[in-house]
Picture (cartoon, rainbow, N blue to C red):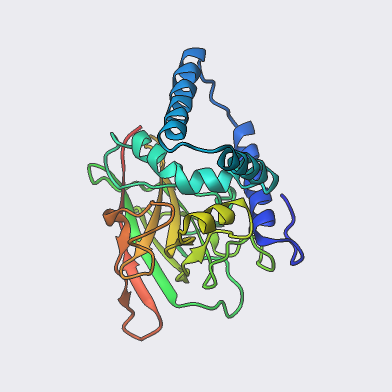
Length: 284
């Protein structure tokens, strides 16, 4: 893994780590795409670009600015970030349009496999005195017909209260706020963690240059990431947001769906908030 030090720029370090993670994922199994499929997709993509150039009378100065920016995206290692923020949500919609059960959404660039194994009633790894509002996140994993999936696993990861992810920002323990929970004999889980904060995608690299040039904001709403799996069922990748949270209505990654918005309630003893969210997996 690319080591991130305090001297490295956030965008460069984060981009390099995300790129390396993606390459490792590809080595595990790369899909073959047929010649006709490549011809169709690339030809239509180029035709759309040609149409934009003609309709908007793109100048050589604008073309050169684009070329320079595309080169910089690669130099900054931000292709995973760019694609995950602005394109993945549509790929996810197409891939899961026939799926029954709980809604999925994008994985994003900050997933790391192999997080610590935890029991059904667990506390995520965190620093002593971890800042943020304590959150009890609990639920049950079932098949779409309601049958509890007693051998399901819930991978969970999220940003801290400053909006930073472990392994993608300096100074955080390797597995901070990451874990893989095995449900109990009724498919249930109870996970104690802290509420994450909204965060900006890195803005000191090529993607930040695009955001500034277009007059956009760079924020994602606070969210929990989940990958939920069980034998004989389709793995679901999703994110869960918080009702009333900033940027839920205008997420830069366009990944929020109404079904994925949580509404936590205060814990009776005042020690934080709690919420239940059940997940139903479609059969494979």
